[in-house]
Image (cartoon, rainbow, N blue to C red):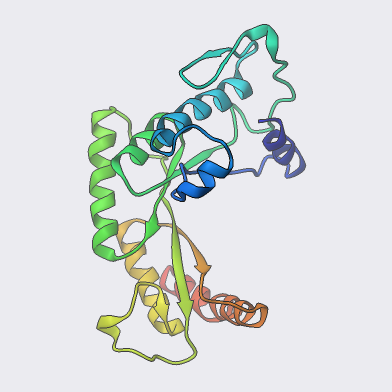
Length: 217
């Protein structure tokens, strides 16, 4: 919590915290964390603790995995952002959506297809209604596995989402925008060298982003 506050202070209040429960069981075991199957409940407790540490004068907590009394911790310093830095919760399940709505300030899914994103939007709306939480001011920011090709090497109907030429990837992003997404992070997972990563990043900056900007005019 204090390390994150330091980042918030150094960035003059620009920290946005993204969290997820993880999906690699071996990492969970190496870290000596509670059982992998309980990672969701563990995450819920730590999200509550972070908020308490940043906002309460005398934070204290008694949960299944973590317990501490008010006099055992000094909560300072405080983040610049009030009441705390925004927390975006990632995932692709109803449990992740419930976690985001209950403890977070936004949702962070992974883009796989247009149909999948439609389903996730519907599920999120259903969970928000169950929790009586409005989605107004509740941002949805997605991560997309992308591979920007110099030339198409497959039929358009067979290619993966966000994989293809700059024209194809820009078209995918425009379709996601029509669904309601306003922020998508591109992760160039197949860029195995520094030069290839730079090529894809520059292609996104010089060709894809201007295309999206023109569509918004």
